[in-house]
Image (cartoon, rainbow, N blue to C red):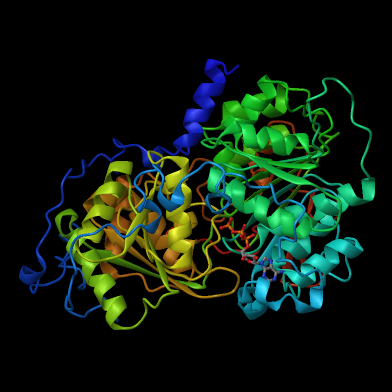
Length: 627
Ligand SMILES: Nc1ncnc2c1ncn2[C@@H]1O[C@H](COP(=O)(O)OP(=O)(O)OP(=O)(O)O)[C@@H](O)[C@H]1O
């Protein structure tokens, strides 16, 4: 039976425990207008957005440099119908979306576990049609210059090819089926570290292949270790060997799908459990056996309390989006799962934490779960990839909707919005998502939405409709900000900017993945002041053009307006928190050790061995201009 704790976790999970999804979460201290003014198309021939009010010491900023997006609103807007094909049968009330066990709707995930996740043909050489073409087109050159930092004791060296790693014959065949030609930088470093049995805290940019980096060693390790005898505590208790936790249901499903592909014909069984879906099917799936359990925390807690899952045999624990999992929303639940169940203690199990962002205070918390771990950073911690062209435009709150329509029209006119090119629009609140979806639909733009107030079935349908291109515009809260790997997302629009620069990094990371380029546009106004400086820093660091007006706002924020600096030295230049002097003063191991393999810090440039053993100094990254 579910306790209040389980309930609270489940409901937190439904919300994505995302502060950004709450309806009352304004940006900074400036209250947002609750309603923005819609300007009808026929009245919208005036300038497309006002210039920002000048920060104290300046004239007006340069205009909204909307290169490529400047077309006037034109073209017909067929008003009316909602475009979310998933909703055609009403909200979960039947129609084609119907039943709980509709395979297409995803409720019986795993029922076809034994089927070939690549299709029905076993032959790795004839899998072309089953595999996304994306992976063959990965632009590895894009990653060549990324600096890599590792710290910790006796760091295993990176590998250049999958062939050089002993992952096992079946797993190697699946890697070929996935058309992964060579490992991405995070895989080159993380896989040998994990195969050596070491705990790992890894930070690498969005879309750089972290999922495979933790799945491959887990699957390979289970294959090597065989299938140990499970205890016979209760007939219906299952004993997974690996647990992968992620913050959202959709991300857990995606990890499950990926892990199933990697585990095909290895004998390793992968099951996913997540909230919002009927538990019966998930229980039946567990009854068929599980080696790797992918889960959201709330549903896992429920299953632990029902004694249907025991963590006693866990050898591998992976937290994806680990900083999110350990921030204020999830940390107590994660602590209970990891520290107050029968899960083997750290040092006995192997623990891997992955994210694109890792603030120092969260690193500090995370270290409680790790034993003598290696810290790996591919690129600067929390940086965004250069593959994404970032644009920021000053748009008054009241002009946002009309400005968005201008962007979407221009995309259509320029042919950017072909069937496959998808646009993801992030807003702050669930109500805001509904309202914007409705507004876009009423104005002839095929849009759907995903947020924590929609049923799980609606969320999945919306995502599927978006992925398929049926509704090529998805309005989302932060529930869709992390981890989702959706091919063909060409444009991410931050209609409302988040409060935290790390959330911005994850949001824009839904485009520009696996070596491909993408575009991210942010609507900035006085309500986003707290983000001015970190945003300008981030853009400058990733070689983006920073508008003069943003630089002026940023410099003003530097003298008291900025709230977005993190404690412990700020984000920029941030790396392994153990190298902070405050940590060392606390009597912990000396990570400023320098030129040896003990507690040292290694800087790599892309491939090959350590190029420069930096003696506790600055590592490979210069401070930002504002530091
Ligand atoms: N070695 C590889 N070769 C080619 N493609 C790869 C390789 N590794 C991963 N990919 C592909 O790259 C894409 C991004 O991978 P993944 O979703 O694991 O990124 P991520 O680092 O976890 O991103 P995020 O931080 O957003 O969660 C996926 O489509 C995946 O199939």
